[in-house]
Image (cartoon, rainbow, N blue to C red; front, side):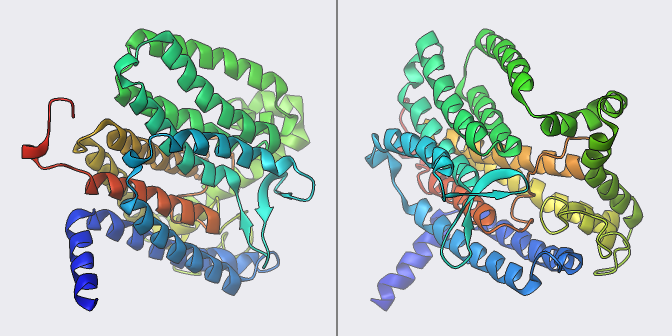
Length: 390
């Protein structure tokens, strides 16, 4: 039995993407260091020891999920994606059930479990969506430029996004679904005319969405893209919505080249930076570790994204390639938006920095998504086994 275990470990080591997992582990450890620092000024709201424990458990469970998903042979269950797609929508809508949804930060985005643990359906839903959309696209790859095919795919994406927006009203999480979808479409090989038509539809949908957004949601955007208009519209609300960006930008500026020192941030350690262990963790890194530390963190994240895209490029089947592009794009957009929030060039919409920010559900599901990528790597066929259809 011990021999078979050793052989299994050796086989997994040789067939999976160990470099990808190593990068993820290093980023998670970097995140733990920053989370501890970010919690120090938040002790009136959180218990640093408990936060670290939850994050460590999330990392451990996430890596276990990574390994399990990398062994899953989804091609053996071609019907599973339909069940999972329906489940995903119902999972998001479950927040509307009285006593199930928990409000945090103005959004009903969490399900509270026994023991004080919380699960965020929107975060879990992103990984499910990547799998179901890749499966759906793969099933219809011979008719990819057919109107009815693209309509079905758009309805698939829109149903999940609408479920998130209708119940939790979490604009940050909801925005990720169309961004991931567009990236997957680009690799799918859809005609440029359809993409142009889709762009027009998104523009029309955005105008309709703007009409139904609350004043607070609108202000988050206006204080960045049109601060003078936001000030005229509602000075008090504009000042409140600009508060986080104002202090994260100041913290980033304070760091200069080498930073003020770990646990020595003049803003992050005095409570001026809101959500310093979650959304604003990049500003904590910049202030305490400086441009050098922030660049190192960003370099690790960029390397991770590039490795995921590389795995997608060398994938030998459509489903695996689409999964890698979906996961890589999820990382890319979330990294870009979160850092943009911290630099004051993107609205504060509540997106965490993947594998770095505190969040048990976030780190678990993000690591699990890498399991889909490792599974794609394990399915790569040798050249002599490839056919023209691959």
